[in-house]
Length: 87
Image 1 (cartoon, one colour):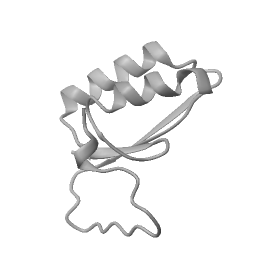
Image 2: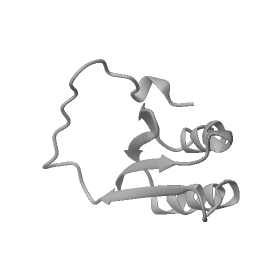
Image 3: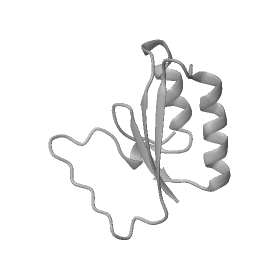
């Protein structure tokens, strides 16, 4: 499946959340990652993030798509991330 993950976490946890997400997804721009991921790896990612975030102050949203067949991505301005930045 293809996912887009966006996060809004307190500054002291941003680096840890980004590092964890980049193990599974491509960094696109500030607080946004995307990529193909298996259901098992998505479960692992969510489990790891649950250990980092504070549910009362932080937010992570995961958009799931079965396919990208009918999608298009348009970037205005500079492209900040991409597939070449995966860890």
